[in-house]
Image (cartoon, rainbow, N blue to C red; front, side):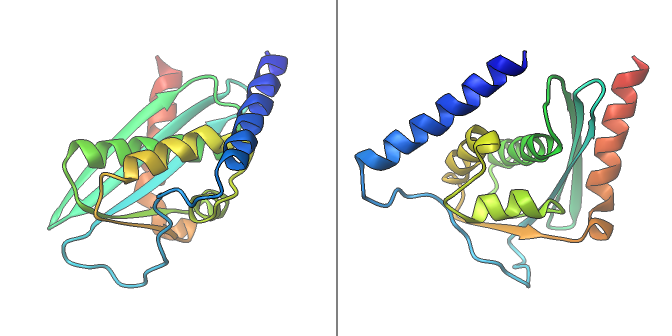
Length: 172
């Protein structure tokens, strides 16, 4: 099973390298700047994941706050090979939900510094290249997008949702 994951990771990295070599042009993708203040029309989305190494299962949680209401979501993914992948999956699910809800201005917050750094840069870890690509493609549907790192203490709602999702999955 580990060999398959390594082959896929290497194939994705090689494909990215090949694509970059084919075109020197900048591709349009959201590389938002950090923002300290939140606009009234902006939805604030906090994401988190909880990963269990022995079962390779991840609980995902995300909370969407917009114009006086809060929507909470959670899910579980199996066959997740690292905490970083779990964090990326949570962010990807949150972005998809924002797109479904027709939101136009979003501020995505996570306590995963590595994930936020990858989303802000053009060089993402090969381990999460596909997930980052999915997030960026989905973000093209929004007028404004910000990726913000927040301390773990400020991400308690999404953290609780992720932990609860994982706990419920293990009970079943």
